[in-house]
Length: 519
Image 1 (spheres, one colour):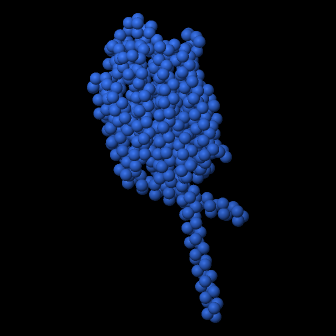
Image 2 (spheres, one colour):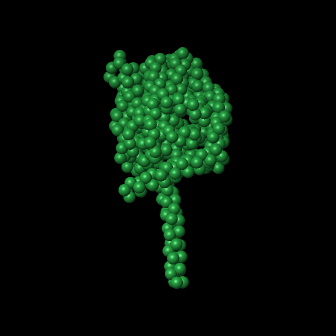
Image 3 (cartoon, rainbow, N blue to C red):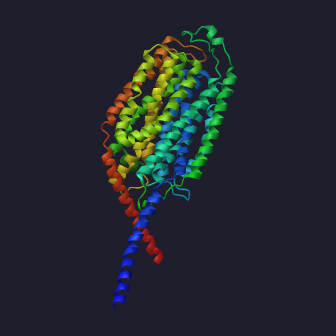
């Protein structure tokens, strides 16, 4: 009898332990599923390099290329820059909407967009840097291929940005992957600056003796070291190297990252474009974040677009401009890990205030002191620290806004790409306006294409475009970011709520599949 009771107790103990073991096993499986390996994070990060490499090359060199190599009038160059960026901005929400409506495949929902857009992006990018052998249709040539490239690049970058939400459900893992991505992206800007700058920088049509006074006399016009044809060839070679890197990075992303399946998407009705726009633009934290970073990003883009001309004509460092640009990007790449530690330790809002405002005194210094090469390099090192913060923080804070939206709207699915695409839309449209206006300002100042020195008015205009205007934009942006409501406490609360929602959805799907298998 005692032996029977002991057997019953032992059996009861086993029955109570089995559910507990199963629950522990389930928790472990969920944790393992959400955790990303270093290899996966690196492969994901490589996907961000093409956008930054091509963007840096275009941002730093396209304006000076159109003016001094293609030898377009500043008015037409401003039209190309503005229309290209404006078209790029318009395609972002369009592609974001199409991505949100696209069906999931065995490779995921984002990956097919990334892979199929790559060959077209590479071809159109190469043709941007080719000078056609005719004059009348040259403006149309650059306008068409610049717009086509921006469209193909958007088909790559919008799905890639939204992919952040589908590589892991864990907020910490996504933040870590974003830090890897920002590190590689800043290295991409270094690579883009180095490839384009070092290949092209060694080919100049102008003398490289000493810093000459600003004049347009015939001797400075006719004195050349390298022929214009060699300079054109250098730009084409640099673009070819960048195209090869673009394809390699896309392949690494495709083979090294697995896009996770969305939970609950089949139950939800897809959003129309108008519904998606209304939901996104009515979410307060998103609007404040976008407007704040709109002003700060505009400041850095204005600086980026005019800095090569500023170094060449205002500071007179023609033979060193590519090295100064490279120092800025190297400094930014090396400080990304430090900013990741800072935002983890002190919070993302404090990191935004401190990191972006860091550049302000150096922007003022570079135009206040007399042209000096050593000072220029020191300012470049300091400015790179702020560039790193400007790169990292928007992409680190956007997932927090998407998570906050999910908490408030748990029944809405497939909206992630809309948040990213509308953010990029506003940034690109504003940058197009700024580049168009800045290039027109150079025309009104008397910029002359194809010469080795410019009038004093051009120098003054460039100083205004790289210092006072960006400083004001940064100040306005930081004031708006002060009203951004998602602090660390709210972010951690959202993280716990999201994890609970995901666990309940996973459990319900498991129960449904178990019932189906038993039937």
